[in-house]
Each structure stands twice: as structure tokens, then as C-alpha cells.
Figure 1 (cartoon, rainbow, N blue to C red):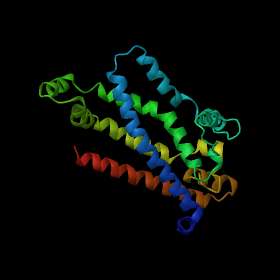
Figure 2 (cartoon, rainbow, N blue to C red; figure 1 turned 135 degrees about the vertical axis):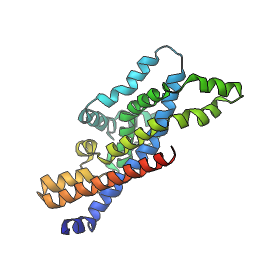
Figure 3 (cartoon, rainbow, N blue to C red; figure 1 turned 60 degrees about the vertical axis):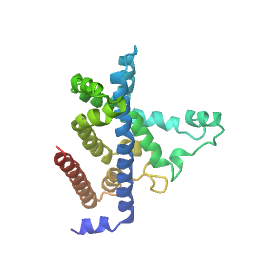
Figure 4 (spheres, helix red, strand yellow; figure 1 turned 60 degrees about the horizontal axis):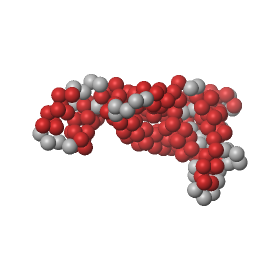
Length: 238
């Protein structure tokens, strides 16, 4: 119990916990609607090359996390990074990205959005295949617009797919480690310190296994509570 008291009194751990929840919340808010929009668009479009676009979107998800982090470290470079070169075309000053306490965590969120949105888009498309066309035909006969059909038919019938996305996305983002370890080491000034990295550092740098184990348990409880709440809400709406 002393281990739990110590880490819950530690401002560093509390900040890591806050960074983890902010990273998770922002990722869910951005990725969920983006994957729905892309999934619906790709599912309904009849343009050639749809399969290629779907493959390109999914490809970042199968690239090893370490390779992705190294590539984005180059992209975010304040001296020779392509992202700042693009910003210069619009007369926007170069940004420090991973070197800024205000931008570093958001830079990691952008990386996560790029890497995982394609995977969740494919899940949305799989859910769309289970919606019968009869519903849309009946709605069209009743004079419903495409927008009304989307809100009244598509989204309600996608609920199970969206619930799966929310739960898995929450669990995965709460366990963020690789980009932090490769790119920032929790910096600058602990702006990107997260629970798993703090646990790793406590266990293997400081050899404090008691505190590290307590951190793991707290993260497990947080994942369990959030997942239970999400499932409870979804079950209540069935």
C-alpha cells in the first residue's frame, strides 16, 4: 500500500497519467469520426482504385512501431524535416514539434492518427457490409435525404463496430510506449511522459520494481474501468 501512496503522491506520475488520458481522449475524438467518414466514402464510391486507396490507408498499421517512430522523427525535425518545409510554403514559421512542451504530445497524437486510422476505417467498412440495402431503399421512398439516412440508418446500425473501435482504441492508446521511447524519452520537461514509459523507467532505470508494479496495476484498473463504462453505456442503448 505504501507503493500506491507514494506514486499517487508523485507529481511526475500524476502528470504522466494526465498525459496518457489526454493522448487517449484526443486520439478517440479524432480517429473515430475520421474513420467513419473515410469508411463511408470508400464504401459508397464507385471510383476505380478504391482497393488501392484502402490498401494505402491500412499499410501504416502493419509497419513496425519503431520504424514509424524513426520516420516521423525525421519528418518532425526542426532543421531539415519535410513538414516544416511544407509550412514554409505558406509562410508559417518552422515549429519545434517534439522539442516544444506545447506541441510534443500533439505531434505524437498526429503520428497515431496517421498510423491507425486506416485500420479502423477497414473495420467501419466491414460493418457497412452488414447493413441491408433494403433500409436505404425504404428511406429513399419515404423521401429521406442521404444525410438523414446516414444519421438515422448508418450510424445506429454501425453501433457495434463503433463500440469495438472505441474499446480497442482506448486500450491501445492507454498503453502508448514505442513513440515516446524512440522520439522524446518523456520530454521535453515531461510533456510526453506517459504511464507505461514512466513504469519502464522506474523498473529498469531505477530498479524500483515495487513502484513500477503499482503503476502497472493502476493502469490496468484504469483500462478496466473505462472499458466497463463504455460497454455499460453501449449495452444500455441496445
